[in-house]
Image 1 (tube, rainbow, N blue to C red):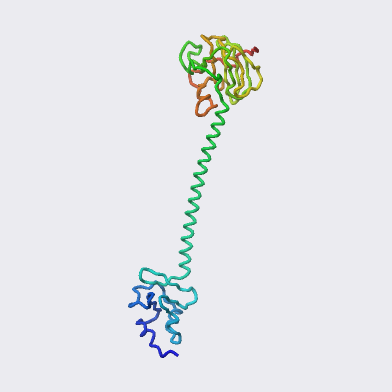
Image 2: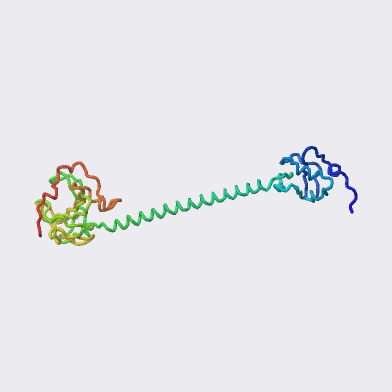
Length: 289
């Protein structure tokens, strides 16, 4: 049986008055002096645990550790520099939960950013593929040529400016549909000579003029790249070439924009100088060749 023990305050050098005492411990035992501050509120249960003379005080303290027998909440020790302070399990769990939530939020944010970047890249790829597919649906009206007159060039044309593009090529060179269309009209015109007008829909028509041969009839459907005629010198011309126009609601636009622009297949703007200077195709008589 152990001998009589000195009072708790005498053995540990601390007095308990109206509250609880918390001791600073090290791995080798008790510290030489009590801690400078204690981060805990005294409770009646805690004080009773220390002041009960029937309790073995060594049950409360062991080398390098401390335990408080107040059952709820269970106090735990946390190291702050060289001083240990009492922190409840609920506080520790709250800190852990906060860190976990912050980590999860960062992971969700990073995942959302990765998805956004992937979606933007996929959208750009789809747009590029769509442009490539659309571009493949539009071809030049003559496979081999030399451009000899640009749209809007001033000269001796009836409108005072050139209303299309001239594709210089030998007589008989195939002329093809630049896009799927319906043959709206085949006609003869004093200036345009033998000509074909294709209706692409949405107010867009394409004109093929000065032909030596017409291979289609009004009302037929033609496909992109399908032969519809041949280069010639019919009408008002100084040499074999195809005069090609792209009209929007019967007003000429730059064929270069339609054929080779960044929005291929979409007519450009209608210049002001064309107003009232061109003949609507509805006024042209239907002619079968």
